[in-house]
Image (cartoon, rainbow, N blue to C red; front, side, top):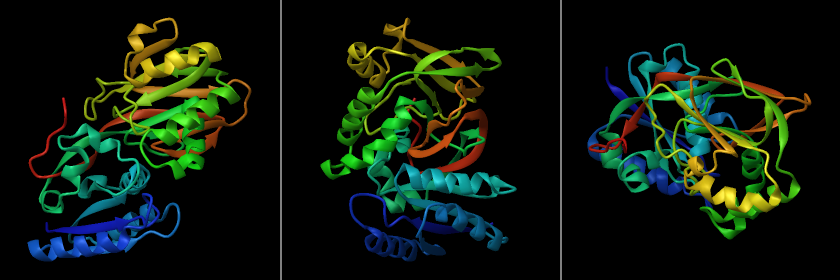
Length: 310
């Protein structure tokens, strides 16, 4: 079955609108390689997933390959669109990273530079990748509850200082000052871990927040998730905790951070109020969330010659 290359461009991604340049480069590369293509620009939240669903319904005689032109949020939205299809395996997707945050592709050789090479990307091959499926939306990379989600929610107010870790770090300081603990009911593979936690982190990938790597051994295709339960800490201890957490040194803080490999997780707020939930950088609110790993559910295209970093 012939592939058709579908570029979904988010004009709001990054610090300036690059959509005109992406359209020009995509058209030139597809024409040079003799590949059929379509280009769409998104106009509102959820639009990328809508484009995926409509295109998949229309292209019954071709294999759609979707290019998420944006950051991790755009990539997650495209992935959610593919995951919602009756048969996700007939499609593939990938990242053309023009956003301020492109953490998922750090799991692959060459990182951002490799994925910006359209000749390599258009002639790449798809590999199966796991997904964090939840009742609040699916995640490719990470899902978190608590302090981390609050940081992600607040970081946009510091975007004027540039990309990378600076807005995230300043948002973290603000969030610590505002409050760093809450009572949760947590189940990991059926075992209860009820306590007061600052953060509940669930990783399929390794990197997020422009420089955080709390689970350096996580893999995208091993059929398991890496859970970190960070207990409630005092503001005095928070600074030291953050740096070790950021660099994946959780084993040095066994009294504060519990690490559990898992397949299914449930989290409830003990007070019944909504929790702040971070799904690949997109924030949702709910008093509970259930999630599980779905091994190899989606097909992700790597640039020609690239491999997953072990």
